[in-house]
Image (cartoon, rainbow, N blue to C red; front, top):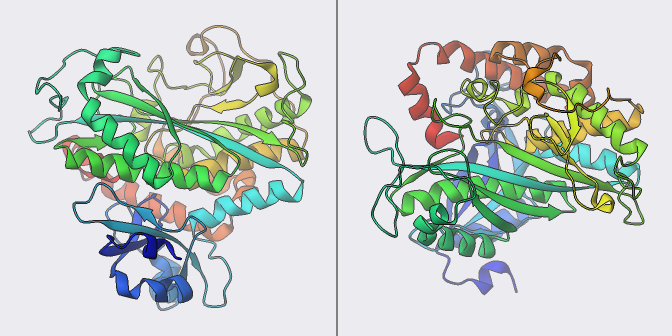
Length: 443
């Protein structure tokens, strides 16, 4: 019996794939046509995965007029149907990824980019185990300026920001109950929720899974769910890197370890320091930060978050259990040794983000790279190389990097660079308020 047979209440489906900005691009389809898509797939122009943040074609893209804007074939991913609990009518999403007419994975598809990295691990008998930490703001965007929404529980605005406050969570208990119920039916492994540093800011941890593609799917679907469910509750939710100038930005941190064919964590040897392979992976991550900054900070607003003493890293360094570092080895059991990558904002495309993190770590392992000594103390007060501080610098670094070419296919590199240069050009015409309005719902 198929999933749709088990869910006769579903009246329509969405079929969609993630573009380079992580936006869901697709179609609304009556249920009676679902079987055909399951068996044959559907067709979109290849260029649909290479639109800018406004949903416009990229000027001079070779995918458009140069080759006649041909179609790709989109096939269901292994995820299968996912309920869409934020909609009023029972509906389901069927996630897709794109192939060429000849049946090859389309190099411009960000999910395929992550799959390539995972396959390189598999070829070495290795498997990444990945978790993500999803930070977002709940906001009232009904006025000229965004502000904290009224509590669905009390109808009051709580004007304080309390780190790890149960009171703050309780104020939005109705929303969080619905969120966790929705994660359950969508198979998103949501664990702890906490209140964060900012006003109306929260974090939900998605637990470790031994499948990087599922971890990226979970993060992509979670962002879609939170934004949709917040609207259902009369609020907005935003993962943009810095929605408020005066409050902390939204991060998307990932924790990962790597297992060998026997299930052993190759980062752990029972010591506090961990294995040499742990340090090789850390060195690769550090090497990848300036080169892959565009995957960690893909938008104009992203760079407002990456400033000193803002709960976001600015220096390229690593440390044991030190949250001022860009790469952190958390404390806890030595046998659970893992890496936390802390650079990315909540506005990233999860597929490109995890491909960049895991790809850079793998390059470090392949090349047996050696990192500098771990820092001690406040990274903001120490002299070190810095994460690119402007969008333009990050675009240039991504385009020129030999390391990036070891992680991503050339077509994806070219497409992302063209997309971001177009956005950089047109974003200069927008006021800060217009940028906020654009990014609030999209990223």
